[in-house]
Length: 267
Image (cartoon, rainbow, N blue to C red; front, side, top):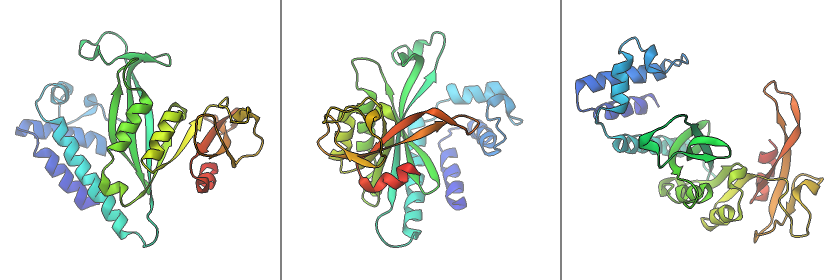
């Protein structure tokens, strides 16, 4: 891993067109790798905050090229870890789909077509994909939700899933993890179309085909049929915890399209 990390840093530095920008890159990288909880430019001892601000916002280096190089190294590291694992059934690749809001206040001319209000929050609403392999949680790709009348967060999530590299999806069994925002019939049917399974949160008032709601269930781990779905799913629930670790009175429902994931859902 150390050799891969060093090679990645050298490749990224080669994208910087001047030595001045390479020095700024070193300074920014040092802030993150120091892991002191102070990654902002004003905490740098090597470069001024204004220099690092120009590096991030004005200097012409290719963001796309950086993303391509980082992804290439991620794939190399993941596949090496896979080849070193014990033989047997293909391991699971957990793919987290998450809707994240970067809240913004004031006016931003450059972002005026991207800033929207969603669930009471104003800002950039981004659907993000993370890859989970072993202990690694790796940001992989994202799409910005552009508001009403455009692709929904669930549709953006399906587009991101479709673009997962075949070098991973052919070697792993893929399981999609998402919260309640991605529990729609359209999203689950889309995941099944890719021949993947999903574990997502779900609203307690979702209806079963027998007329009951999820909140009427009394035994976790049941297979049930939800209105709109063409196949049964396994449902369980768990109590939410406060910041101090104590249990709240409210709880969250979760369902899986694969029965064998029930024990993992409970865990």
